[in-house]
Length: 214
Image (cartoon, rainbow, N blue to C red; front, top):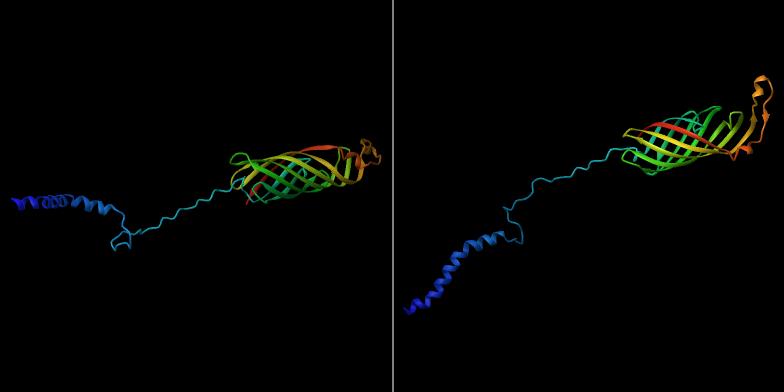
């Protein structure tokens, strides 16, 4: 009896250990193990690479454009061709050649723009144009150089764009100013004039261009 009392705590402890062994084993299996991985540890067999989808080009991100221009009093004249290069998404430089009422017209323009919706921009442009021109309906100027300023809106898609502009020109210099009076029709000679008298005159113009972008 005395021996049983002495062994009773030991037997109780052994029974407690036996009862909790499965729970301890399960907890151990869920505990992160450190050290080298076992040979049976699973390794990833596939590498997933994320595909980068490039956004399509639009009127707000095009880099180059070429197309036809049309206008009344515009830097490229009545009809012309213009090529444009985007130095950044907001700064563009362009050059063009066209036909005005008195012959060839050459132009250069620097434009600032900013997005106005996903497929359109608004901006301002400044530049110069050169060619023989009419200062008004009766006055001709040779080698006239004009300073131009305009407001612009562009809209279009991935491969093309439209541009509408409205601006004003100021005569910077000219030569051989001649006023053709209506009496010229009856044989009277043209009357020479002073081109400096037209330097303070602001001449409005409008223009339209359709261009392909690349």
